[in-house]
Image (cartoon, rainbow, N blue to C red):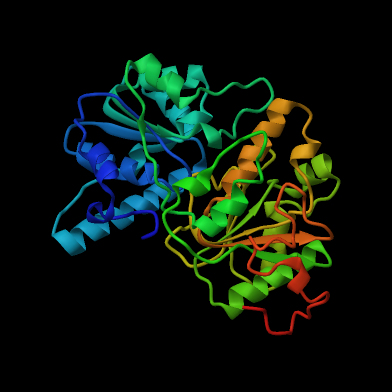
Length: 386
């Protein structure tokens, strides 16, 4: 969780300026993936926690859990390094549907300060409903990461939200999560549906993304298990398109493209994992972002999260091309971009057969191990090419 919570002293001048902004005015902050929006939200929460009632609303259950664990890290840091005691209520952090139910049971309640993270994933009606819950509202989002625009649903651009509040959008220009090398690959996947030049905002270098080619989907998983073990990785995200095997089979023809399948496979191999997926109107979730166990999530549930090492599997299948409408293509492309941009250190692109042409060619020097340098068949017992 130290990767999520960043001490105030380690933030840049623009980030600190937004944290120090007066708390009696609305604020809408936008920025690319990894620009520090959620970290600023955490610091704003600490700032307003002594000024009366407050709440945070996010879209997904997994992001709520990430915030709850992030608050624990912040409380611990302020206590150990500054001798400061912070009292923050985790029961005032909601995912949206949870807040809707809470609101029905507590009609008429208004909080002094409301923080909404990933605001671009809510509709205008949902935004207006939430704004009525807070006297002063701080919203954080990025239009390029809109991933809940399914079917007839139309989400609200942060710029529109700012206009409705009568404020000017405050922008974050630097990306601290992605390395330049990772960004140069990631930004190509959603084009031309989403044209994001995220590499222009990145400030640091690192490893190039690594190609992981296997003869089958299970082979991809075996390679992932070997890499996690051999490199003793402790902050891992494994990201997939579908929640459970039934949906994966219905929409793509096979059940393995799902969190449920991969979770079961890892557990059968004796690997302790944590996960979250929806099935039959209910949620199966086991997540502790303070543990070192690999986390298995859908692209959508990974929204707002960060891992040092991210494995995106089944990248030979062009999910975008199988969407029914241009609008759904854009939403799917954005979600794929979100998944690929969750890494702060190393990105692993896993596939069988031929890599989707949404990625740079496998012969490109944008990868640490271009295809022309790969051995055709690699035994799982061989030394990995690190």
